[in-house]
Length: 184
Image 1 (tube, rainbow, N blue to C red):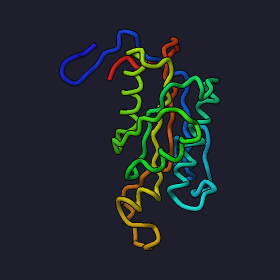
Image 2 (image 1 turned 180 degrees about the vertical axis):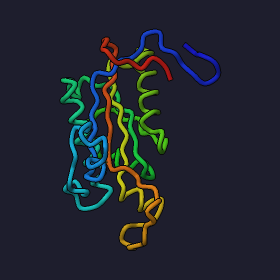
Image 3 (image 1 turned 90 degrees about the horizontal axis):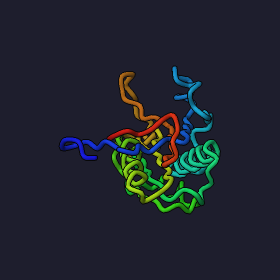
């Protein structure tokens, strides 16, 4: 299964049962807008602060994904997930009600790839029949932590980066489907 110094090829590739993505309004207005499961117009996701908004975004995306897969939370062995906040706060609170053992990840922009890779390894090794993987970011929480809190009212250059408000989730498992993780 090991290929070279940094790669793994799966003999029995774990398969993707379902995927879901929920994003903010700005992302929904972009060229991929029709590809998302939901576009939320309220950047606060009905919550009192940005961090709680990101947690709600994760909760909704995880539930949407499980609904699409037809697999209940009781049949998912582990959750591999993370966000951009210190101590993965959004993830810790966002998925707690699911009561799925969490492997909290922080890989910054690579968090979803890390979640898929580790989840696939877990399924391939036989440690779980099904896992849920997810990653999120929220424009306002990223600004607050890495750049300038929005409350400062700072000026923003047109060429400045913009962190996505969105969450993606995937259920991986052993049963064969049309899409598989063949290697990492």
